[in-house]
Image 1: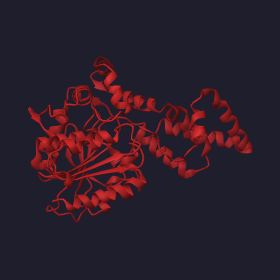
Image 2: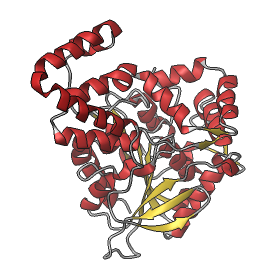
Image 3: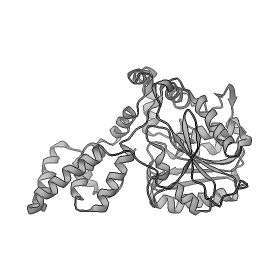
Image 4: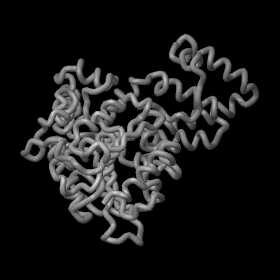
Length: 378
C-alpha cells in the first residue's frame, strides 16, 4: 500500500531520497532554508513525528449504530432516519487485510459512506471486522462467509453488496453460494482472478513457500498479526514509509492542514488488526496460490461454488496504479461470472489501492456514479 499523496516531490528528488548517502544533504538544505526558525521548527517536528509514529486509534466519521454484534464483526448501521424497509439495503464489505474497516468512512470529504448516502442510498451498512483474538485463531473463511450471510439476513435477507479489496472476494463467495441474497455486486480493488496480471503480490505469492506463511502464523501464536502485514506493505515502498514521509513532514511543518491530514492518515495506517491464522492460510493457499475461486474449485460452507452462478448486475472498479490488486485481477471477473456482459460495468479509476476507497477525486467521480447505478438495480 502506498502512503498518502499529500505533496508531490519531483521524480529526481524521490530517487535521491532512496539513497541513504543523500539524506544528510537534504537535512542540511532544510536547515539553511529555515535559519532562525530551526529550533522552533525542530521542536514542532519532533512532536509531529511522534504523533504520526504513535497515533491514536481511528474512529468513524459518520454517526452510526450497531445493527449486529457477532463473533467476527460489528455490522454498523449508517441508514437515514427516513429509510423504509422497502429500500433494498447496501452493505459495504470492508477489507479485512490488516487495517481497520474505517477506510470506508475515512474523513469528511473522503468517506465512501458519505458519498453513497449523498447519491441517495438510505439504508447503508458497513462490516466492521474485529481484530482476531487468541480464541478466534481457528476461524476459517467459512466462519466469515456464514456471518456475512447472517448479516444480510439481519437487514432483510437481500442486499446490494459493495466489496472492497478482500471484502470483494468474500462478497463474491456469498453471491455464488447464496445468489438469492444478492441484488447487485460491486467489486472495487478486489482480487477475483488472482493469477491475472503481473503485480508484486501475485509474484510474492507464487515464489514464497507456504512454510513461510505458516511460520508467521506460528510466530503470531495462531494468528496473522497485523503488524507483520503492515511491515510487508511498507517494505513494498520503503523510501516513502521509512524516511520519505519524515522529510515531507519537515518540509511542511508550518502547514497545519498537512499536519492534520498526516496525523489522520497515520491513525488509520499505523493501527492494525489481526487475522485468524486458519483464515489467513486458507486465503493464501486456496485463493492466491491455487486460484480456486476463479477456477470454480472453491468449497464454501460444504459445497463447491461456481462464479457462473452469479448473474446479478455487477460493477468492477480498479485502480490504474494499484500495485496491490492489479486491474487484471479485478476485470478478469467479467469473464468468470454468469452475469450477461451488458450488465457488467468495468471502470478504471486514477490512483492506487488506498485511494480507490478514500481518494477525493475517486469518490466524487467514480463512486458517485456507482451510488446512482446501485439505485437503478432492483
